[in-house]
Length: 99
Image (cartoon, rainbow, N blue to C red):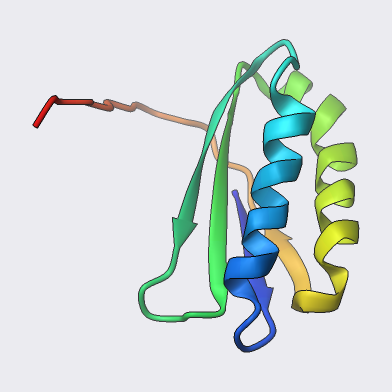
């Protein structure tokens, strides 16, 4: 999970760039299972990306390059370097229902 802190008013623009990097860099990576982009309602300058990987080994092999690419793209918009935390998924349940 990577939490991004942007300069005031730069989140939307920068986050579109980050989303583009993730879509391009991870689309065909074996072991990549997807990601969720979370925009804070309380802090309009913060966003979090939760990436899902098959295992920790694959995560470690690929996350550095992808993260560095994203940071380079949005460097001018960052308030501080992104904060990275790694978690082990205990369980998950996702639904998509037709409304």
